[in-house]
Each structure stands twice: as C-alpha cells, then as structure tokens.
Image (cartoon, rainbow, N blue to C red; front, side):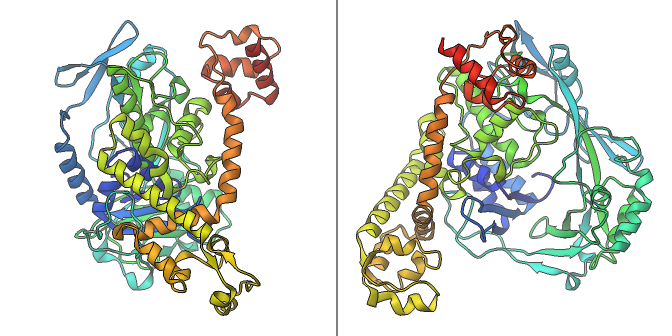
Length: 583
C-alpha cells in the first residue's frame, strides 16, 4: 500500500473508479480489503463526491498477490534493475543486479521513491526508498547521460503508534458509511472484513512548543534537505512555522488492519529527531502513554521532468521507454496507478500495433493528470484535486463506467461481463429517465407532503421529472408515494438498485449543468483536433513572444489545444499559431 493505509479521497477516489472502469484491479482489491468506507463531500454537488477506504495493509498485499498470480501470461521476477539496454535511441531491455538481461520491445519505469532514495530522521541519514528497503542506483545517472532532465523531491511519513498504548476515550470516533457505495462497479457483495473506526484528536500549544524546540535539528530547516516538498500535505514542523497563529492541528489515527494494533497518525508527518517526535506526540490527548513502532521520517528521491514525455507516457528521447508514477513528479498511490495503466496499454500497443491510447481532459481525471504533467511540468509533487478538472461535472465518480468501459472493452481489458453490466445499467437509467418525463403527478397526490418538506405546492399536474428536480426531493422519498414509481424501480437489478437510482437522479437534477459543460467541451475540441507538426520551427516565428517560443520548442505540443494550456503561452500566441497553421 501507499504511505497511509487508505485508498481514494478527494479526486483520487474518482481515479480509482476510472481504473476500475478501464478493467484495472485497484478498486476490486480495495473493496475486498476495506475496513472502512466513506463517500467524502456528500454535502456538496455530485461532481465533488469522492470515495475513500481504509484498508487492511497485510490483506491488501495478500489479495493483490493472489490476483496477480492468476493473471495468464504474467511472469514476475524479483530483482533490482541496474541499467536499461538502449540501442539506436530505443530501449530494448534491462540489466539486473543478478547479471540477468531481459530483452523487451517496451519497458516501463515505475520506480516510486527508490531512485537514489535517502531517508532523514533528525540529523540521521539512511539510504533507502522506504524504511528497511534499499534504494536503486544507476538509472538516474544513465538517463541523465542521455539528456534527460531530473531533479529531487521529498515526501514524509508519520510515526506508527501501538494501539494498546492509545486512550481512545479521549478522542472522537469516526465511523465509516453504511451506504451501498464501493469502488468497483463489479462487486456488490457485503464487505468481507470487519469494519473499524478512525479516531480524531488535536495537537496543542504544548505540542507546538516541543516541536519548535527541535527545529534546529530538523532536516527541513537546517539545510540537510533542499529538495521540493508537497505544499498541500506539509509536515507537522512546516505546519507550525507556516501557520504559526494556529493553536491546534487535527490528527486522524487510522488503523492499519483488522488484527493489527498499528495506527497511522495522519497529519503528523515529521523528520524531526526521534525524542522530539515522541515527546510532542505524548502531549496529544489520548497519546499521553504512546508507544511507537517506528518514528516518522522524510525521504528524498529523484524524478524526471514529465514534459519530456508524450501523452502516451512514452519518453521523447528514447523510444519504447515509458515512465509512470513518482518518477514523473507525482505523489499518491492512485495517481501512480492511473499512469501505470495508461503506460501499460500504450507499451502493449507499441509492441503489437494499434492507435495510441490517450484520454482527454473531458473524458477522465487520468486524462487531466497526464495532460497537466506533460504540458505544464511540475514544481512540487503533483497531487490530483477536483479543482484541476475544468469539466468535473462530466467526470463524476458515479459515471466512470459510462465514460470508459466501452473504450476498455474495445482494447480487450474489460471483459464481456463488465461490458454487459455497464450496458444494462445505461439502459436502466435511460428507460427510467424516459419514464419520469411521461409520468404525471397530480397536486392532491403530493401536496400535503410537499408542505411538510418546505417546497412549493403544485397548482396543476406536472411530470415526475420536474418534481425530482427539486432539491428537497429524491427518488427514494417519492417512490413511497407512487406505487407505479416503486414498481419501476423494482425492475432494476436487485444488487444494483441504489447505484442506478443515484445515477439517474444525478442526471436529472444536474442535467442543465451537464449539457452546458458538454457544449463548452464541443467548442474547445476544435483546438484539440488542430495538429502541429513535431518539426515546427517556433524560433523562426518572431510574432510569438520569447517565452512562448522557448516553451513551445521545449514541450513540442501535439495540438493547438495542448499549446494553449502551456504556462507562458498567451491567447495572442495561440492566435498566431492558428493563423500560421491556417496558411
């Protein structure tokens, strides 16, 4: 698993549902090993709803291994790659520390935090990509010699606490949801593992005083670490410096498993000396007698400028070589999984032929993620947020299967059962919406109830569709009043009834927003279809700004649409390109 024992979250949950819709296993394994599930942002519109699960870390590993061992034609070799084999500017295989050469038509690098990984606890440094796991040397140096630009990033992790030493009575309990929601569109069985709560507590001024006393030995502030860190997920020492006026910070204690007493202290990432970390934690309510399994630490690692990639995630300098995950400057398990799937698809296409597979910004969060990386690059570890997607009302978590399963089926990833499920769901929804547009409601049937929920009474009959549009009403409430509606809903497949009702209701209530966003997409698609030759000489076009010439020459956008999203390329520069290409 990733650093914390969870999958999903704001925008990340949408990515996991997209991976599932494309035929990936992340959502399936997450559902099989979830010990808590929550749908975040339910108080906001459905474009913001994001699924998140706590998982049993050990069960997660076991289930993944079981699934991988059943995959036909997949071989697993446990070793460390020392170097790539490159001939005529194309990768043709890898060499390992055991001295073995694997020849390949395509190679994907998914290196995590292991390239020249270096961990920090106070003034202590340890080589490694993760605690007790060695780093990888050689690949950065080889790629650099080939002209690849690279830099260093950092991330951090908190201490792991022994649950037997925690006083939960001093903390606020946070249970999961009991709704029908899950990650995978396939699995509708009850969650197999017992569900467990998370716990909320807070730091105090006493906590912050102890933390400040250790700043002189903090790798972040004594010059020991100079690499780029995440702005949106700061360490606890960064929080007390950046937000010096705040008297407390919220912490979440997340269980690592059903049978484990290990807890992850979300919100307390730190690389301070061990004695400072533990003394500060013992001032937190419920952690006064805390015992730890290990301290928090920071880790530095190499990454490569993602503007050196095409949208397929193939590198521009070496053909048949693909990068996915933290090597591209991203952070997060879900972002890495989405990239890995797209890189895998395109690596296969490279080997066997076919049209490169690229998802647009209006088709998926994965498409937004990759377009941001290859077009804009990164100046900090990239994490997905709903705010990064300009078409987020079209990229909801509930309809990832509608958007992507057809594409996956054509590729051969989604099997016929998954495709059939998607088609039947689509037909149920369309049929139900058509029914609501025909079914009339008389005032005397519903007015007494409408008054109790504070919505306007009817003066004349209206269609059920128009009644569902009201924010105070929903299908589940209305089917109690209208037997024909209840009968209609009963036709839905029993195991998927709630999912289909919710999807239909969203399409009804937000139809205006959805149609408006589709019109915007159609207008902008024109720019996405105007292709720019790869050998276009931007430097010869003096009517382009200097910055635009430099950025366009470096990134070499494939279309005018991509060019328009490059920072430093102005609308005037885009107009110049349109005029030239028109000629």
